[in-house]
Length: 415
Image (cartoon, rainbow, N blue to C red; front, side, top):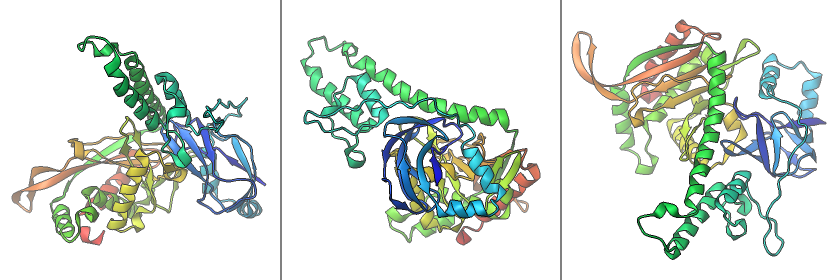
């Protein structure tokens, strides 16, 4: 029998709230199956099991706040038995150690009360939604949830509050020029600000750790994107509008293929040593509508075609903003890519997300004079940057990576 513990879904995560179990004792699961939903500062995540197993016992009740590393369930695992009998690879042992490095044995767990309908039926409400409803004075029993199995989520509460304002406002006898005197208005601002502040605190924790622990070095290069863009335009003419490929997909695939040539940037710094990963999982920075960033991973980006990457990216963006990510998508990224060119930024100097050892940034594509072989021309030029961990690599390796990245982009037909 082995323990299934609350995983760390990022360097900034300390606790999570168990929202729902997807299993019961006796269930047999395969690696990658969903065992539970957990709510963090970045939304509700689907937690997966990382090996074939049978559920023996569930130790916690839904709506319990659980510190990272706390035992959530007991499982029977043949894989665990075999690993115990064999020699465990150092890389895997260290990675597991990193996931629970911030673990502290919980003194107690807290279960909050859940509202019920008039007929005694228990409502499914996420912790964030319950807190927001209390702040806005919204009756949860009057809301129809849009989450899994009718669970009430944050957006349901906000919609109900907005609807209530529209219905009630005409009946309020006050001068039109004083709309801010509505009782509900002051409650909205702190709620929205509190959510964004929570996200910023989570990001700040990870970035503070990064700046504190990682000696960054930065490199930049300019890449002629004229040929890749021209090739992409011709390629998209063969496709319907919904199947067209965005330029960022070329950047993702070129980054992944460059990492196959320079693998030292694809991995983690754990236990004072670089641990290079064979699989290439590109963490793609996605902005949330309510503020903040999440960087879920596109798995095995080097093996996917451009069409597959485009589909994977669209799916990831939709599920990220809908709060439907899997735990592996937050834990597995081996390097992060961020692109801010679409909002006018020409250069991106990012901060590495620990325990990763590199971050690639792409800026805006602009028309610039370009000299080549004694001839002056105007080309579509993009600045690519690399933030590297100087403990794991150096500028020579970083420069080789940017060179490989440029080479990959100049042959888009081979991506």
